[in-house]
Length: 265
Image (cartoon, rainbow, N blue to C red; front, side):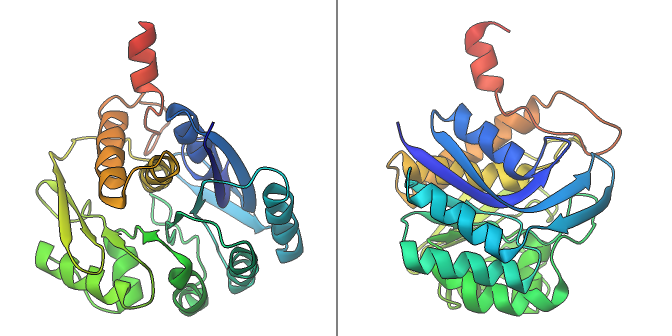
């Protein structure tokens, strides 16, 4: 069985963070493991607070996983502060895993900040160069490049600028631009586009976490970056289209929709 590791925050409401990542890994037939970086008190309509895990415990979690079950892919999510970023980057440089997918989580779906503004520079200098793929949405990409993104052409330019920061490939997610939801991948040579009709729903909690962990799952399974992104796009679209409509705010997606359909549930 292939394995994947999520290094991310914990969402007690189960729709995002390591909870979403584990569900996504399982839906792809991949054995999932976690390194918790922050514990977030949140639900579908608010983030009440979060508490960061100490860098020492982050490093020890990573060591214990790699000493026993080395992952075939690593997904990195919420790293709220410089200290967490430095701890993760240190251990990944030591362990040199393949298939590192970075989701630069900066905000919750309701707009609450999940990354210190002062840590963005550390993200760019320490974490981005380790990534085989980074998956920013429009607001995250804008923070990284310091420029507004208003069109698909702007997304292509942003992907190229982020690629120059040292990662192997970039997917800029287009969910914040009007019209169809078009994600754009740049691998250093070529651009690939992944269009999908926009779903009229508020139930999109954890979509970035789910999308990036689906990509990591597909990379662990041996797919190319292009195929991994394509399959992840199909997976997240189905999860959004069949969201269980839970919660008072932006509800979670349905991570196991395809399995439920096969089981007749």
